[in-house]
Amino acid sequence: MNKQLLHQYLLFLFSDDKIGIIQLKAAEATRSGLIEEATKASVHLPSYYAGEILERLLLVAASEEERSALQAMLTGIMRKARWQKLFPWLAALAAALLCIAMYWFGRK
Image 1 (cartoon, rainbow, N blue to C red):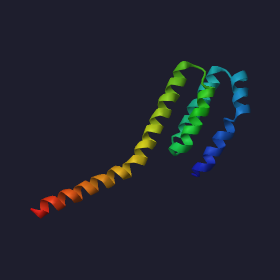
Image 2 (image 1 turned 135 degrees about the vertical axis):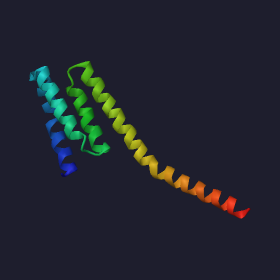
Image 3 (image 1 turned 90 degrees about the horizontal axis):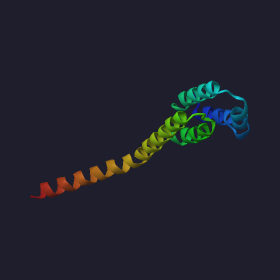
Image 4 (image 1 turned 90 degrees about the vertical axis):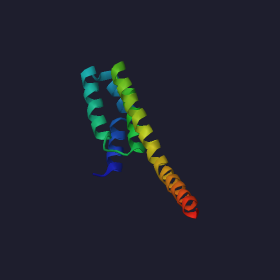
């Protein structure tokens, strides 16, 4: 699956003009269905793509429950992205500390 193409397709589906049409014409059940299917699709996307899609879905959400669920999902994705950026630095720090400890204990 081409993730960039899926991202572009979801952005096309939730562009400003289409969000306006959805807000004016769609019933709440239709909005819920759109949000559910789009979140299923965005699970397969990397965090830098999924975040943008979830922000667009917040505009479509009809109820406060959907907004809070989308906001929680967005927060979780951003937290996961932050850990993925931080993990290599933590691994390098742990390896450096281990090397220093081995040096000090090997010297004695």
